[in-house]
Image 1 (cartoon, one colour):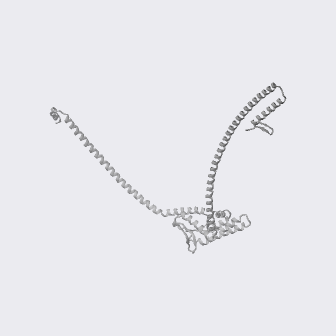
Image 2 (cartoon, helix red, strand yellow):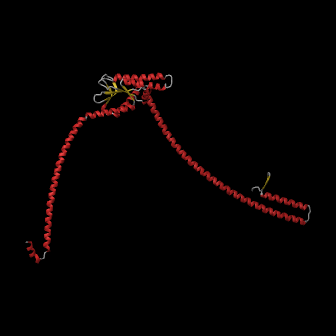
Image 3 (cartoon, helix red, strand yellow):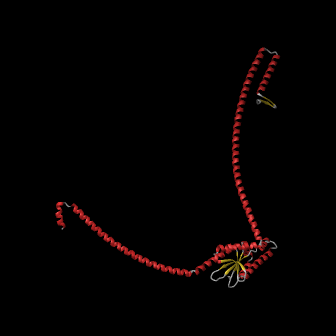
Length: 374
């Protein structure tokens, strides 16, 4: 039972408090007896004490009832608050679990994307490694550039208009010959890829070795230009201009940006440097020239066919004229047939009218009718 009286460190429950009050009353009673006061006074004091004891017991009962009521109210309030807190905590836990589930789902999706990207990166890394190993070998690098050039030519030109690995009259073999029409000669194309000197140039950028690397790069390209001009420009056999195919746009851009003297040297030697992009444009132009030449070669055939078509048109006109005459004659015949049918119809109508008149005449009037008819 909870204490109902507290003073300092002393705390008394309701039973202890009643016992203490009773003890006090007994003490007072004994004191009164010991003092030998009169019986009336003792009775009066006893009555007062009993009344006070009753009042105290009533107050204590009321206090106990109030305390119990307050305990119930406090318990109900505490239960309500605990229920609300539990509900709030439960809802918060559910929301947290839902958010965690959604976050985990997104995390799994992102991890799956990262995993696929990682696989793609690994595949790309393997391909880059393979390309690096390919480009590190000079012979393989040459085959790579030559294959790229052949693919472009075969994609843009007819099969009969070019030859790969053709041998010229000087016994030199060129990577590709494009056969131009109207006796313009064959355009020789050779694939070159000065990768080592270009890599040294890129590595030496903004360093003291840059000037030497630029000199080496320009020298290597000019060596290729000179070799193409000497091997593949043959008067009366090949075209006046040959081409050096660079399979790298970066190398081509470096030449045109920082080495104009090399480009001019190529022009002087009648060797044009092309990249994959500029080579595609050149092939487009060549195909247009070939198409125009083919149209000119077929011009006499077109003229002959146009003349024959004109004769066929004249013959068709004659036949249409004759057919029109037949149509006109048929129309006239049909008109005459309609006239005959109209006459026959009118005569048949007259006969029908005559029969109707005969049937309507009475026997006494037949003689008169015959006379009138005669």
